[in-house]
Each structure stands twice: as C-alpha cells, then as structure tokens.
Length: 282
Image (cartoon, rainbow, N blue to C red; front, side):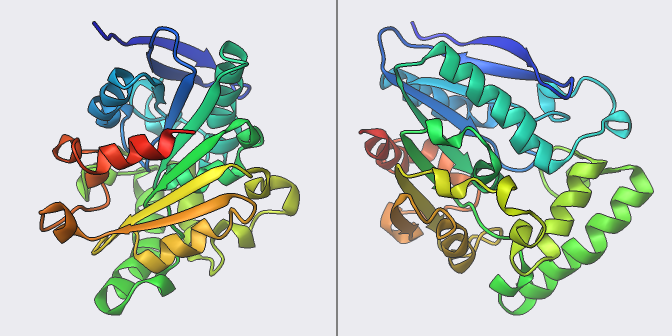
C-alpha cells in the first residue's frame, strides 16, 4: 500500500519547511512539486498519489509562512517571495539531491512555482521540467476588463491591504492562503514591472539559463490568471531548455473549463494527468 510521510527541514534563514514525501520502492524517478501562490501542498495530494502509483517518488512542501510551514502568526513572519526561491526551494532541492544523488530529479512548477524556478541556484539538478500555467503577471498581457482588474490588483489592492493588515488577506478574495506581508509586497512589485522580476534582478540572481533539460509548458483557454501570451513570455525565459509548448482547449477534454487550478483536479486523472505522466518519461 502506498503511503506518505512528513519531515521538516531548517533553512539558512531559520525557517522550518514541512515536506511530504510519497515514496516508492526502487524507483529512479523523483518529482518535486512547486506550489502556486498561497496554495497548500495538500492541494496536490491526489495528483501526488497518482504519480506515486505510477512509480514516481514525489515531494511536496509549503513555502515559509504558508500552511504547515507557518510557524508563527503572519504579522510576525518576515520573508519574501525571493526567499521562497533562494531559501525554501533551494534548501529542498539540495536535500533531495543529497538523498537521491544518482536518480532522475524532475520538477512540476505550478504558476508561481514555475516562475520561481528560474531564481533557484540549484535548478540545474533537474532532468525534466513541467511548467503549468506559469506566467508573467504584468497587466499588459490581459485584455479589456481583465487588464484593468489586474492593474488594480497590483497597484492598489496589494499595497493597500498589506499596509492595513500587515499581511495580505488572500482568503478574503479567493480560496488561497493569506500571504506574509513582504511576500505580497515583493510579489506586487514584480507584477508592476513590464519585464516582471527581470527588471528588478541582477544577472547573478537569475538561473533560467542553467536549465538545458526537457521543459514542457502548459496553459489553457480562458485562464483568467495566466493568459496564453503571458505563459508564452515566461517560457521563453528558459532559453536553453528543450522547449515544448502545450495549450489546452477545454472542449478537447469534454469539459467547459479547465481553469488555472483545474490541471491538478482528479477529474483529469485519465486525460491531463496521463499527459503529465508521459512528459515525465525520459
């Protein structure tokens, strides 16, 4: 019977990261899932079990200040979204590489997870990468009303509420976890820039070029969080990877909507999940 187990890692910044491992016996395939913004690792539980039953050892975790990695009240939690990459993900990558030095390490980055991957110094350990709805957040990639909505979100909503509440109350708007103050502030600052975080980072903070493995990027029609052109833009930043681009249309899967978070719903176990499984094969 397939099981899962949890353990904690302490990071260089003194944060404690809670990781869930879905182990297999004698598998050479390791998959690390990088969560979307404010999404608990438990959201990927069913998908992780699916991969486990298909002979992949899977690791999920919560970023510092989120879910089981929130060790104190958010008003007292000082971290940034950059730290999620260079501190949290980097610590997880180094640990997993140490535990599995000869195995194939693969990564699935969902939304923000795929954005942060390019800021992780150890990302060169990866043999295969799947990016799911990973995009730039600048409003220019949206159309009509949605352009105004995204602009208002980054320039008004995020700055105001992080000042007023001392954290960002995501749960009041959508079904996402509340964010530490400086995570939300930096995230909105990135999203205000035409070239996203590339306008704010120096060259030695960017590691997109290190990924030369197979990289498959997914998007779907009518994703209000990640329009196709925004995903296209982010994909091209991984310029040395062996890129494959897949844009999914709901009618091809006999559904009306896939959605930004729909890729990991068990409804797609026999369709989209099977595509992911094929992509993970080396």
